[in-house]
Image 1 (spheres, rainbow, N blue to C red):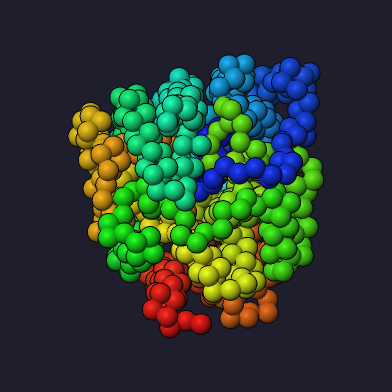
Image 2 (cartoon, rainbow, N blue to C red):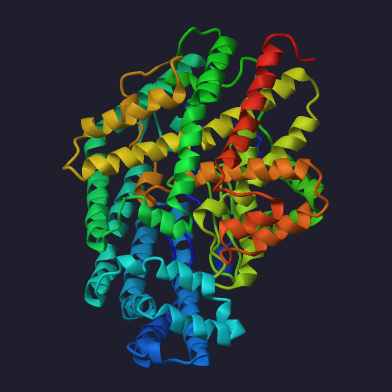
Length: 616
């Protein structure tokens, strides 16, 4: 994914597993990017580039080698100038990236984003000194400056996250080299991956489909259609496996080299530092989920096999709809109404924040040739607004994806008041509002279900989504951990990577599955592994956190709404311990994760009771 220097990368595309093509969806909205820039060749972009070309070296001239001598007022002025540079750079890259992801097969758009990335990388090279020199400041000296100036003290969380890398900092010269070469390193390999995935074609009964459409077949009601989709998927991925293995090997090795030079103790350390989360908290989450595999995914999929009349499920049955599934496409206006009503039932304020996404061109919803797969919400810069990308095809899970991404959007709007440097939320907390938005929408649908059959479909769909969010993402995390450990020992063949992939699949999905020939290649298209290593545990973190939050909400805390909005408004200005404390929650407590997993287990209990005829 693209990422501006100023903000987190947008939410990476969610697993494109869950939509089936349908007609009569209504008029699907498209982005109006004029709020960023009027056009690719507009004067405003040229003006901003020229400003960066002048301001970046001027900033270095004014401050390089001088940070240690600045007083509190001058340090504040320095940080605010740095923040403005990040904002202008972020605006340019947001515009270039959003245009590119509308059509990744358009050479002109691809060239534009590459040119902008290259230009901003060049312009920002003089800024590399800033974090390096800031990290060399003595703790006592910086603490004194923060204590002296309240406006400067606001930036303490930013400085703490920056200084978390202090023990792993390289020389100024090496840091500048890494900065300069990134445009032909990870950035270039990311672009190659994106363009390759967008260009993939899958032959299904003589019809060539793109990745999104082929993945959608895996949730088709017809089992033979699902099988054809899975086999086409495997065939095309296998034909391109050498390239995907090369990209994966190269990026993993590049990461290993940089981590080794920085003396980072594990491949995951950089991600944990960026997320401002302790390794033991992530380990507690991982261990709790793995221990729960038998009572979650293993138990649910055994139940689903029974519903489908199967003794053994194939991988193409994992996302199969229930036999009595209602496949009537959901009109876009109905999806909008469902989500906004669910948001409004919690808080009219939440619905008011979400409404402009539908009316002002902040959503791009239609499936189009060359468009990036999946969905994401990108915050752009704090003086504009977020944009949401979907590939809407009218399934109930598409409605849930809309609720998810709008949750991100609401979070990003509320956090924008923190300013460019403080608004970015660590990935572990970035999923909070999105998963909470899904939960609100799910509960609204469940409460208004017309009969037990509809309730069963909703529960089963939610359990599958939660398994995909928790169990599957932790399995992905384990895959990455094993892959990076193995790559440190030497080059990995495609078969080596396939074997690592399969080592986590059976464990996580359970004994009811048979794994078709070719499924071992399904790691190859997943963008998380390429764009943001070890990102995936953030999904499980967010789901567990929201399940615990929702339990507090259901208990009737009269101040919950105000506390919730305060948490979202905080953006990246507070640690997760500080944000969760008002709710009486602590993510470092292993029981915290068991509470969230228990919610999933209780839903499976209800489904089992329905199967046994015990529920009315």
